[in-house]
Length: 466
Image 1 (tube, rainbow, N blue to C red):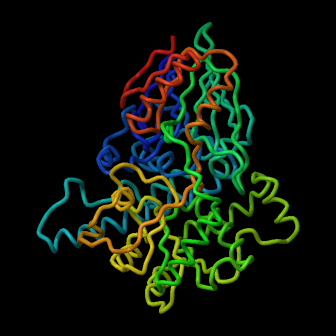
Image 2 (cartoon, rainbow, N blue to C red; image 1 turned 60 degrees about the horizontal axis):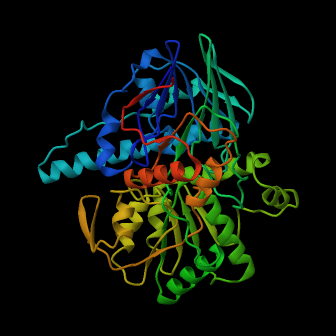
Image 3 (cartoon, rainbow, N blue to C red; image 1 turned 180 degrees about the vertical axis):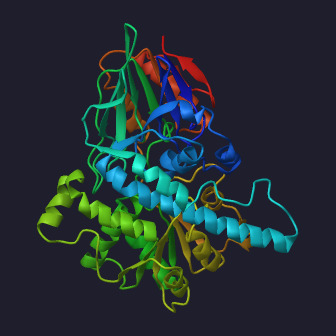
């Protein structure tokens, strides 16, 4: 029995693992690499021969967990893709958006490179297109939390609520090879407790091996006051300067949470009356799915829906779909709030809004989520004076702000709390989804405090589950 680490190894993105049991291969996640220095890996063929993979288990629909599924299908995968019902509903939206962004970026890059007289190290084509998404979706199989799923003969999987985004899961896999039984838990992305909309993450008690994320393994989320007060201050101060608030937004969970909080501020009269735009077709569609699967949300959200209070709507909110609607925002002659994807500023409509606002001292670029190493968002957040957007250099004159408390990831204390719930010592804990230094530091702490054997695997490392 082997476990192959094919992504998110000593880095944050690119989640992909492959469990080998009695000659059968089960893949867990198939995510896109989003850090700039690791992006070339997206173009590499699957490290595991695609035709040998029998089944795939998907923890959730963030692109760094699902974004290479159509490429895997393009390379020949035809097995089932098991995931929860809300994740299945959102997956097509995410993958079509990803395909569209890639095709648009390729057209723009090809045109720009021709104008500049240079070529690209990668072919002028997207990783996959809409037809590849069409081939992917019939493979999806829905399941409920705690429902046993036979991934392949001898391998049973159960999904438990990870509290990260709607439908997100940690996966418990029970595998039998000969007379040997092993239980492997894949944490997925572990959420925070007491967040709006989403239920709290599950605690699991027994495992032989644990694969755990470590994104915030070296720090706790800063508590700079409650989220609503932070939002109210930034929006009010920026509006008073006559500028726009530009918020790079993940379309799933972060966009819905922002709408939830800004709606509360509008209804309470805590911010000026100004237009608020959700400029992301994907986020608009995902918001509808959040309302459709409200039985998966927390009690407060369900109570609002049952009492006919619109938790994800408020006066002044406009959800834009078309490119023309997006362009018209830039012609608005008054302060506004613009939420647009992608959350790390690497693609999508947010780059256009950054181009139009990053050089304006009146504007604020507001970060509400993790910015991966090497991403455009990270460069801006780290204080870069000039940044390159769509092939042009822009001076950063806008005010740069960050709000804490939005993260969908458990912080250091949350991760330690989660791993401490295992009642018997796992044979090994593997830390992934963290920058190398962060994961190594958390590994040392878990070993010192809990006595667990902890490893931080390398990219494409295979480990025998003895």
